[in-house]
Length: 222
Image (cartoon, rainbow, N blue to C red; front, top):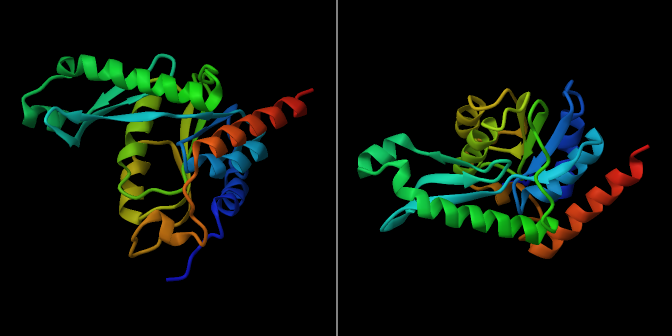
């Protein structure tokens, strides 16, 4: 199978071209770490928008942690989203996860501190939130991120990804106000298959990319 993108930077540059064509109100770019960060950097640069993270931690069903009962999404304030059908099936309520929610919130705070030095989330209320990842497979993480983000009252949410399977993209599109997706190959095997170079993005690179993006944006401000 022929790959579609040289690497995440190339995909981000192509994505930036498409996103820049939209008429967006006061955009803020939110990357899903870690792989979404190098894709989001050129998008934020093209829009001259702040680049932030949207951090998600899965909440598993007690005793069956591989089953995602919900997720905690960071923000101001952080949001918890749950799968109502799974809760009913398990005989659980959101209150049963109070301790787990606190743990996952603390994990998101620690990750934000590691990646951004504790910088507070960029407010999204009344703004266009552009959510960026390096691709979508099952869509579970991005769905949780979008559900949590919606509760922070953005003006609109635009999902921007280089590649996704058409069926999953259709499901996720119902949760946002706009979608930019460069490629929807069928059949779809995995996100990394569609990149020539798809190395793991380490914490150090995420930290460096975010710091450089913020420095560049501050230098461009009048």
